[in-house]
Image (cartoon, rainbow over all chains, first blue to last red; front, side, top):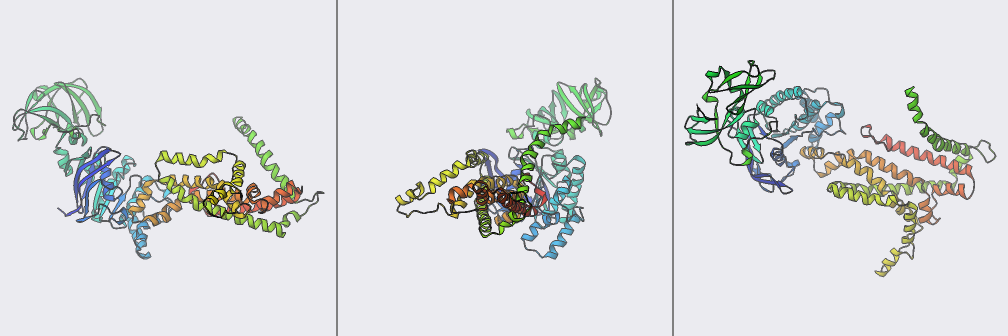
Length: 357
Length: 274
C-alpha cells in the first residue's frame, strides 16, 4: 500500500439546508486510481469539489500530504481537475489552453513548448497545437482537457464524470487511455462516476456512495463479488435480492427452501438479505434444482440471454448463454459459494434502489 | 413557383428598406454633392474644414469618447456585480435599469435640465447643507452627463449578456490551473466578454457622436456639436445641401469607427447587433 496522500476527516457539508455529507471520512493513497461511485445526489461530486477547493466544508478537515488545506483556494492546491463538460477556454488555441497553467507558474518558453508536445502526444493528438477548440469533437476536447491538467504535473488528478458526454464506443476507448495514462504518469487519480462498468474497468479501489455515506470500499472484485449490503449489490450489476432467514451457520432458508451457503456468524433464525447474481444461477431440469419455476420472459442481450423465471412467487433474473423458450418449466441451481448473505439494511441509504435503471 | 411566393413575402420589407433607408441616403448624397441650383460641387463636403464646423466635429468626437469611456467604466463593474447575484435579483435589477428606457428620452433630459439648473433642486439641496452651488448646466460636462445617463443601459446590457454566457466551470478550470482573481479576470473573463464590450462601445459611441438634442437641452446652445450644426443648417439656415454634406462626413466617421471596432473583435463570438 502507498502512503495516504489526501485525507478527509469528519466532513460536514450541506446546501440550502440539505445535508449532502455527514461526518464523512475517506483517504486516498498515493498513485492509486480510486473511484467514487454512486447515483446522482450521493455526494460524490461534492467530495471531489471539496478536494479541488471549489467548495468549503461546513466543518471537518482536508489533509494533503499531512498538511491542512481545508481553507486553501483551488489555485494553491497541487491538484488539477478534468471537468465534466471539458471547460476549455474557447478564446484560446489548443496550445494556449494547455500552456495556461504553465504560463502562470512562469515556466520558460522552451519548457512550455516541450510540455505541449509531450502532452499532445500522450493523448494522441499530435499536431493539434494551433487548432481552435470549436473544431474538435467531444472526445478530442476531453483529451485536451486531460492534457491541460496533466502538464502541470499535479500529484492528484480529479476527474468529474469526464466520459459522461461521450458515446459508448468512445467511452470504452477513453477508459483504456485513462488506465494507460495512469500507468505512465504514476499519479493519483480520483474519479467520479455513476457508471458501474466504468468504475469496475479502471479502478484500483472503488468507494460506493449513497445519500452521503460510503457503503463499501474495496477492489472492484470485492465490491462485485462480496457486496456488503443490498444497495451495493443492486447498484453494481444486476442482482436477485431475496428475503431469507439464516437458520444457522452455513444454512439459509430462501423462500422457504433450505440451501447450503458459506457465510457464518449471523446467529440463528435471523432475517437476512440473500443476494444471488443472475450469472450464478444455472437453469437445469426441474427435478435437479433447489427451486422450480416457469420462464416468463426471454430477452436476447448479445453476449447472453436475460431470462426471468417465476419460482415460489419471486421473479428470478438469470443470465445464460443457452436459449430457453418462454413457458418452459425449469429448475434453478446455484452453488453455495455464489450465495451472499447480508444483514438487513439499518438505514435508508443501505437499501436497494427501487427502480432498476 | 413556391420560391417566387416566398420571395413575394419579403416584398413589404424591401419596400420599407427602399423607401426609408435607400432613397433617403440617395437623396442626402444628391444634396451633398450639388448646389441649390443643382450644379455639382464638393463645397458642402469640404466645408467641414471650416473652423466652426471642424471644431464642432472635434468636440463631438471628444464628448462621445468621454461618454463611452465613462459608460464602460461604470458598466463593467456593475455587470460583474449583477452577474454575481442570485437569478431572481438579477432580473429585477436589470428591469430597474431598463425601466427608464420606456420613457421618452426627451422628457428625461428635460427633467435633468430642471434638476441641474442654477436654481434647480440639486443646487438647493447642496445649499441647504452649506455647500456653494455648482453651475454645471450649459457646459460640456452637463452634456456628457446627459449622454452617459441616456446611453448607460446600452453598455450594461451587452456586457451583462456576455458575462452571463461564461460558464462557471470555465472560471473554475482557470482557478484550478493556478490562476488568481486578477489572472482570471484579464485572461478569461475580459477576453470572453470582448464581443459584449465592443457592441456596447458601438451602441454608445455612435449615438453620442451624432446626438444634438442632449447638447441642445443641457448645453444651452453653448455647446455646439456637429449634430447641432447639421440640425441648424437644415432647420434654421434652410441649407439642405450644407446639412447633407456634413451628414455624409459624419456618416463616414460613424462607419469608420464601427469598422475599426469590428476589426478588433475575433470572429469567434459574433453578435448580431453589429
